[in-house]
Length: 97
Image (cartoon, rainbow, N blue to C red; front, side, top):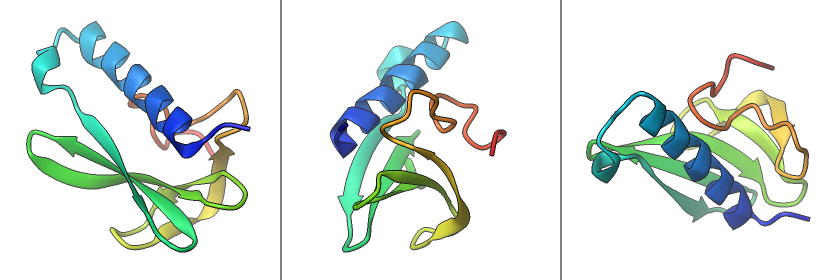
């Protein structure tokens, strides 16, 4: 079973690969952090000094949710951190459901 840190490491790796593919300055690449709540982990992306929610991860099941707001996930599971196919890696964040 993967940990939330494993998932964030996967997100960062995919993000960095996309950043390099487009030839962006890697010293300014997005960073990701975890803010843990009672029910969800909030994955926060920081780009150019601005923060936004990348996604929410259910602490019990590992289900991945798109963010509806800064404080709440949207309805509908987008994937699971333990599955091989994770739709919220890289910059193709939400095009698959």
